[in-house]
Each structure stands twice: as structure tokens, then as C-alpha cells.
Length: 90
Image (tube, rainbow, N blue to C red; front, side, top):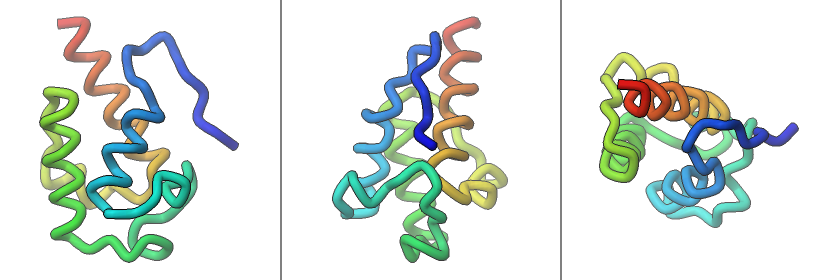
């Protein structure tokens, strides 16, 4: 199942490209359900790099507690979508 665009200002494919770049992987490998630790070998340092790049790209804050919950691209997309929507509503 692929994430569907919503009325939110988040471009999911742009986010996928940001994450793939941080992971130094082809964008095709960052599937919606790819598990970061198990499938993509993401450790805490790489998680931090992903968070920093997302923060820079979207102007949102990702807390350390959020990093522990970044299990898959789908989860990151949901988190970023919520934060971007909250920021837009403010």
C-alpha cells in the first residue's frame, strides 16, 4: 500500500527523497513499509541525521523521543505531515 497524498502541504515523494539522501540509498529502497532498523540498517546516528534533514527541509522540530518511534517511512511521513499541518494552522 502506498501513502496517498492528502490536502496537507506535505509532498510525500519529496520527503522520501530527503530520507533516501540521508540514508545514501536509492529512493526506490525507501518504501512505505521498509523498517529502518531491520531493513535499512539505520542506527541512532543515522536517525539523528534523518531528523536534522527533515527539520531543515520542513522547518519543524523532531524530538529525541520521536526518533525512537521512527520505525518506517510511513511513520515518518505521518509525523511530518502532522507537524507541517500544525505549523501551517498556527
